[in-house]
Length: 212
Length: 212
DNA sequence: CCTAAAGAGGACTTTAAGGTCCGTAAATGG
DNA sequence: CCATTTACGGACCTTAAAGTCCTCTTTAGG
Image 1 (cartoon, chains in turn cyan, brown, blue, orange):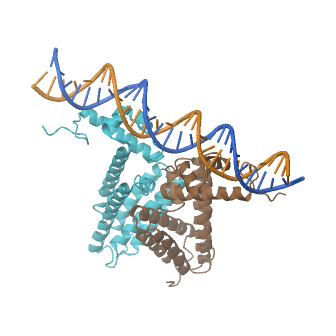
Image 2 (cartoon, helix red, strand yellow):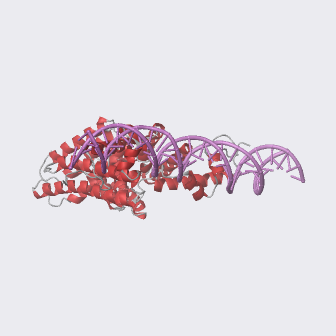
């Protein structure tokens, strides 16, 4: 009896309703990613999702709520992707594989659009304090995946004992975000490649063996 | 006779008019920096600059034109600042001084707001192709200052012959932009420091002597 | 099958932001 | 000192986007 999906407001939700809500969220997330949050109107979302005004307001009290859900779902996606690639990280080679996969994703659309999370952060961080904190937490979690990986590498002897997993993780995060922004502005994925190579080289400087 | 300042539209401009125009541009640039371009209304600009609607439209045909002028003036400021610090760059120590100055600027407001140029780039790059190209050019010029510095260092023997000035410059740019974004999101200048240290370490890896 | 609740469409209202215009004040220059 | 241009304030208009509401349709569950 309690297996019925429910709205945020507590109203029951049928399968059909859940699907509509998902279409709205997906369309909003896509639009806000490629054109920015402010430049995305609810009418755009309505059209792209093939729904109507009443449905938007049935599922979300206002645009802010939709926006928050977009941030949450994007963060979940990004973290999930990174988790897949990083939970078993234990060598510089593994790091390279992760970087290659990331660079490939960026190259898919010629560098455009920036980071799914970073572009939201840049637009919203100084706009809405609650969202800023939320985004900061998501970034921290992402960075935590890298830090944990580096810690494992160090403990396993792949990195020297004096390697600082936290600093390496922060540096790599900065390289990723910077690479995204340069690629987005230049409409060229090359800077991402260069930035990642720099950060990985920096990690490699702390490698114990000659793990190429 | 031709020493009279002139409007973009060709109309003459008195000293008073020029001052008003400057107040408008300054107010718009500040507001667009801290709250974003889309979130800045012309009414905000009007209030902050202590002018009126008619003055805004006397000096700029529309909001887009004002926005473009903001981008241009911000870029000029950023490039001027970097030029000051980088034209004579010839050692890793000099690079450190530049990085220290940059980190200090970021720390002044606790990391908030991001890069004066980067935050505009992130918001506008996928919005207006002309502006994207303009911003890409400005970034390239900034990067060029670094590249030229590295080339000088290499030619002077401070960097090894196999050092790639272009790649080092791109890497450093990414670290700067990534550092800005992380600092902005976390409201903490520390990530910028870490990112700059990483990039400088990467440069130092190509140092010929033991230039600490 | 019947009914109550969920889902859907879309017209309508409100609001806020961009943009126009006009009357007045100040400066310029002859 | 007068005429012309520039500077200014702010009322007004227009538009586009957010948000409301009413009616009809579909679906779940007895």
